Length: 456
Image (cartoon, rainbow, N blue to C red):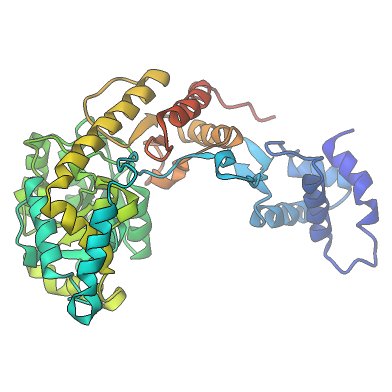
């Protein structure tokens, strides 16, 4: 008996003429009951809608509506070129049973137990003694901004504290930049595979996205010129250090080429430098090369830990006032506690120790992933690895990973345009231990080279 025929038998009690529910909802309810009772399991593929309609003796439009209802409830999932599958998420009873999360691009844990106790308590004490209870200027307290400016300067981008403002996080800073740029242009050049958070913000602000091909050094100069001269791009989003998802570090020569093009054409640039401690010595920021074109963005969440999430933006000098207006209109000012804690770390130069620890633990996790997944070795540091593959294969791998208790970045989240730069991003920082990461990677390894099933 086929799946649909067995449903035909079970539907007898649900399809009575006295039912107040539409026929497609009765069919959807029968599926939902079968899933909850375990007669249909996660990953089971449904017959084609035509087959279901024939076996159940209903119109194909009725089946289509039933499947749409099940999709809306999150009980089935359609995959392009493969079919429709039961999609039942198992609720875990404890954190240790939750899926290993390789979808969030965070740094590995670097803080030791009790290492921050004194700094946190001292930051609280200091804020409590401030006037207005720590409620300072919208751009952040001046002594906090001075500490951040000192840190950013030691990372290679010299800035006056009065030229920067503190934000909730890097995502907030990127969105503020896009909001300001939208008054000048609505055409944004981006790499064909790009950071999902930036894509979400750009689409929210109504930008037309122009995808650009990349190479081993990042954004190609000829592609940026094409985006400007052919597609009319007036702004460019760049992640030149530890690019997400590609993992590319743009070398100095390429940065200089990109900067020259942007200067010549008056391009506004959002430089997302959230992983600044991973940038190699001697490689300067785009902001340093063209200060009047760049909205510079960085983050303590990526540079140290999500425990102390805060962001920084340094707009072009002529756009500081308009960007500050956006900050005031959206959040007025950020909560000062994280800024106070980080300011103490910067003032004590403890960030130097933490950054070295971050680089060491990042390299350790990268080496493990490169070994277990048979990836090429690299001395460039990143919190993730990127495995390019066609979109259909990437979607299948994502589903296979989730079936085995591992959540990875949805492949479509990073793709702009037709998807020729699709692939799988595996974030290595979230698992709390190396052993937990190793276990997840060993379960992922067999899925790398699987080919899609034929659809019949």
